[in-house]
Length: 199
Image (tube, rainbow, N blue to C red; front, side, top):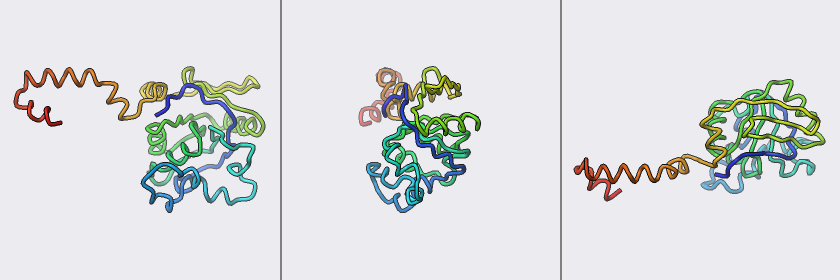
């Protein structure tokens, strides 16, 4: 997982409320066994709408999506986070998120930022023409027009995102402690020695 400190650039001014995971990535894309290429299916139905932001070359490669309330509702498919990442999105800003989507986004290195609706309205306006900056260290969203909003994030999630630690990375970071425990257990718990030796 790539560390996140700053996410800066253009943002898709999407703004739609109650976008469920089937809108983010339709079910027929879930047959794949790899994450690669899911970005092509992201917002597939929306991309068929005339004038949609996801097909507008002005926003191509934008790392941010500005969304409406209750983003990521519906099914718990982790493919929604994979699809966003594959299309280059590393931050979604919305008034609220589905808890399951927010968890999946975090586990895959996507920052979800909850801001009040008036901030979303302003960011939708700015995103039409100018970039947006998200600083995870200071927990702030800013624009070049002196707009500034603070956001809350769980300290554990912040630590993991700043350091690029997914579940495997968190385990690997404890390698020394795990090794020390195993060495101690072989002496103090000899009945586990065989199990530890084959693990």
